[in-house]
Length: 120
Image (tube, rainbow, N blue to C red):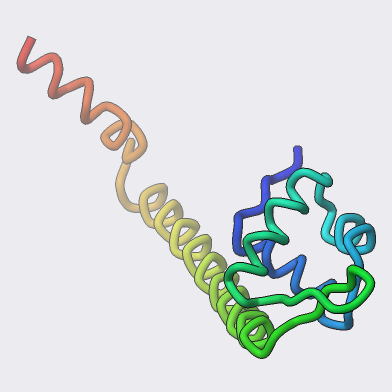
């Protein structure tokens, strides 16, 4: 099943399309947005000073928009690295628990039920 994009991802997708200049229809299709969401986000990025409107309904990036895309690229790469590290850490934890702590899963999942039984 698909995963919903976060606000920063949607903004980055819009700005990536607008980078070379684009009209609403192109942005909508390439950023994979409904017209309603496109209108909402275009208004937002215009107010934020990330894009501006040029003649004949074409949108273009501002310097601030270019800066956003560069920072977002670095953020996205770093975020992926951290997520990979966290997965590796969780995997290692599972290996340690399975190998050295018998029934470790039971202790972790039953902590709250033991507390309830003691008080009840």
